[in-house]
Length: 251
Image 1: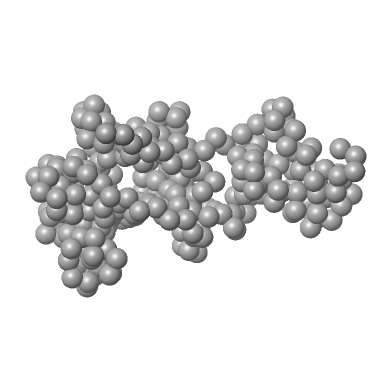
Image 2: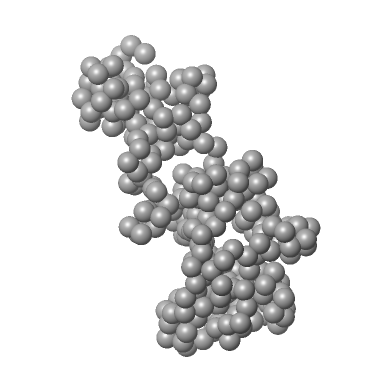
């Protein structure tokens, strides 16, 4: 487009290629050097152009691989994760994370580790225990089509889960909420707190985030039928990969 600054002209051309389908979701963009040669500009100018497209959510970066046309963001039905109705519907064969990922045409899997650690102030307050008391922590890297999608860290009172599947790092097909129900603690309500921040180095590495990608931090406290807090779940959700959806009753 005549009269546009060089970086905006590059962005316009790439945007049009994405819009017309020349560059499809998942397509790798030409390298910075290739674009710089094509448009006879500096790498800095190309970087500004990519920055515009990235701010629009059209492209994403992958560490060590370059820039790609963004896939449609995963729809994360936060109000349905842990849904008892969904669990019963699945007949213990799929947890709600797997159900949501598969419903969007992808394959879900998780990598888990389990340990006992002293509860910090935040977790202790929500579990109504003293700081420093041991809690069972189940950490998960959650994948869609072998791409890391989110991190999940669950904290449980040790006395509730000590002899259960939750202490085994193997995958739990039916989901941890179902295990809690089997233990006599039926999840009946959740309290969510959502914040947005930049990731830690460890989070960025585990999720293969490009520099500058923010994350949502969802902190969910699960209460059982006696209104006892039985889990504090922390989900780390990359901002360029998720749309958070809440279906809230108006009653």
